[in-house]
Length: 357
Image 1: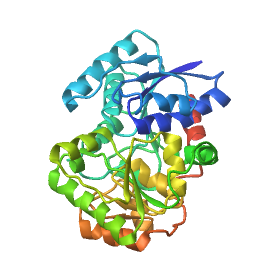
Image 2 (image 1 turned 180 degrees about the vertical axis):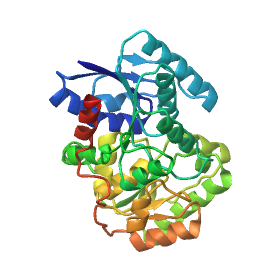
Image 3 (image 1 turned 180 degrees about the horizontal axis):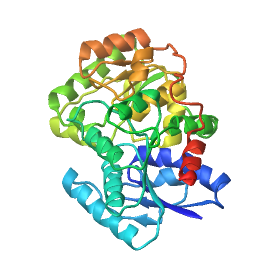
């Protein structure tokens, strides 16, 4: 039996890992054993622990409890902890997801010990090296043995960087697997927040830590709420709340409802019931489309270019006028589900590819 170590550390990775963990447990448990290592990058139970219970995935066998800190300190502590686990156990491969510090730390630690690295969501490029996520995803790709690309654009990016057909596998997107699996469950379990609303999220440091950008985005939210006379549900990330308070950027429109961060099922239910999404999250851009909602992206670029090219998402950056204009045009309309992300069979393709190596 093959043994792999799955490394996670942040909300998007818990969600992506669920699809593959279920596939292993339900179909391939006699051929593949999975242990989970949680770096503790998200250490608040409201931001991490609930996902394991809600998504019915095994609790981590290892928890490094790293917590927050500078990129260098956090990544270094993760690498040290992961390396110790790998040296004290025999694993046939390490599975990493996406583009967080946990992803890069896991990929580097495994590669230096000559353990195969399997990167889910490989080949994404924003081509903005000011984003720490861009550095993480590039490094992870270049030390990986198998690169699971969610789109054909991702494959082309990898080919341009010299990767071969043997290394690249088109898997489709595991988040699409999850949306197909959990959508009806979310609607059954989660009560509506409000009758009609726009869903907004904001968490990336280049938005939250820059007072000018943050002010423009918040002003746009106020303008949308007041002009459209629509509620905006704003699950506020701890970093965003801290920055808004420290910069004294309140007050908000009465139409804006600030709530605590949502669990995955709560987010999926909110997406299905909302009339529009505004976000700087990469994952939420896709999930919005999978739930047939238009998305206004609060960034100057996106790694999910397919959404922009198809018109399902609009890049508005932190430009108040662009954000308000896009929201006014798209509010209440429904795009078609993008066909570039596979057929909802990514987890099966990934597990079978790992077993074939």
